[in-house]
Length: 229
Image (cartoon, rainbow, N blue to C red):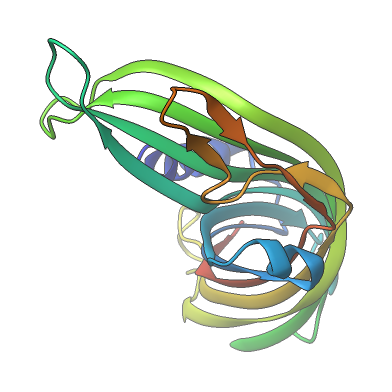
């Protein structure tokens, strides 16, 4: 996550000069709560980052694209190996998604509610890496994707944008800056995935993987900043 967030802001900065007039780009931090069958198998809350871009041409209806990355499980185990110092065995459960967006705004004031729908696909995978325990070098010795699957996603919800800074018409470089918050219900099609504790190492050294299968619904709570172009 610490490498992804700076990358997101860098991409938004690069995209700003070529953004179309009448468009809005935004970045959000999100909390993703498993729902339905997914909630039966996943006990913890996911954390992630969401980026989207929509074009409305100055009207109330907008179309766009977006993507997000959610980490819904994280485990760290310290291993002691013969003749070497301790290592960390780190496993992350992840969901990366890309989607189309349809958005309908409820006006053009300083506080604007809106409805939003999404349709796309998600890639669900579990990755394990073996790293040096020393905090100062964070070296990765080996990395392995243990399990992955794909699923369609669709859903929607509502949000609220609050103007923080209005663009100055005399300054071509100034932009509308808005606080953007939203709640979405995302239905995910059935997929096979791993959860925290699904990978175990027996005393004889054998690795056992217990996969789960269900629909992959999420309730997403997002808070971020939107910039108008």
